[in-house]
Image 1: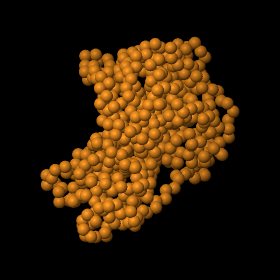
Image 2: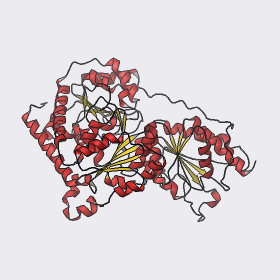
Image 3: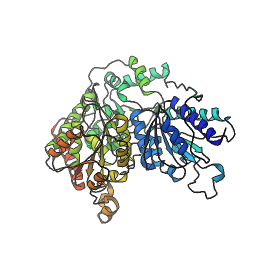
Image 4: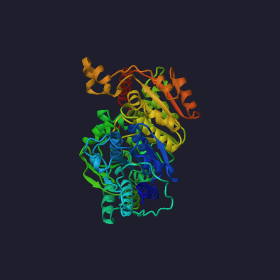
Length: 576
């Protein structure tokens, strides 16, 4: 068997094994050293391939595809710095628990450390930001390592989808010639099945926890983004039985849908900034599910509590950045709720829950008062967007201010919607590309993003165009880094604009034209409403730019907080 035949057999079996383990999507970054893998992936009948020229964008494109599909996605590049450009997406996948299979083609051993071009040390290059690293071995003489490589593939996928989910790295050294033969459709595949169980508590543990819950008179459930849809957990049923409010992060998926909303609290980030309210709500038990919430106000509030604080995590990690957990409970979240429910006696309506709901309702009324604003502002953008979202919408939200504005203005609604964001490492890189991945996986998506994040990943627009993604981008352009205006740096007037405000003065109409996007620049709210409605019938890339002023954003938030404080002084609020 010659070199070409051996390489083809080895890589065909490797790709077949990935497919057998439900890896059905691969994002390919073009290059020479990855030629045999790219060609064989492209020829595989059960694998969908996407091409993305820029490796950094490609990494986030794969991240979005995996987020939206909840299935492992492969990522392929050539050797050298191409692999390094995947690193930001790998980091985000690691911290947000997204299953990626990163396949980096490499130069063979004899070309390492001898100044060969496009050669860097790729072994373990992602460090602790992958769950696992392995290197394929391709014999030059026979197929004796075929089973070994297939076992590596089986193991890699199993680790990637095992809890907590995350990225794995497979390095593949390849010698020339690099053009493979035909994909071997009949090659034997040794895809070792991997059976993974559900992490559950014992009966004595459940009994002890249920007694703690039933004895609590002022319990609170806090739910952030979870590895699977929290609407299926039984969290709502648990809250209703126990009489606890559910402080639902916008990424928890609990604010939208047909499930019961009777215990959902969504405006806590606003009203917990009022010291009197925050001090009045003094729980005797906090139960936390998922990643830490977006809200800083809830973080500060939790730091002042001295009650029992349970963290439930099926991924068995230490999700406690404020060091307030009194018990770590490693259990599948859905199994935890399902097993507890029969042990919890339903409480009648409690004054504690009623007080949370009353404050929440008052806060929503005050926040909704901006609906009459005539001037364009960021708050009303997100209030109107949240009200407009169509049934089964897929909304991706950028970091910095957009996710925080959505946290404030995404109120409960019976229409379902899936909310996505990159909240693993919380960076502004790769947001456009990740949203493109969501759009490709879900057929259509909406991205709400700030101007700096948009600029940072404009290469993602090419991925959208080339792969014909149906993506509407709501571009909030305040000409700089708006979130810094809310931070202490804003008081440093001398250097604030140059170091933090960072105005760019870009005309994004040129970017839209470059990538053949439909483009609308908003001048009033009527135009915004029309652009949103039209977006659902526009295929391809659609950019709706909303120009705003950073200083107005800060003033509007302060005004809303003052209005809310005045309303609280006028009304009777909960006293502990």
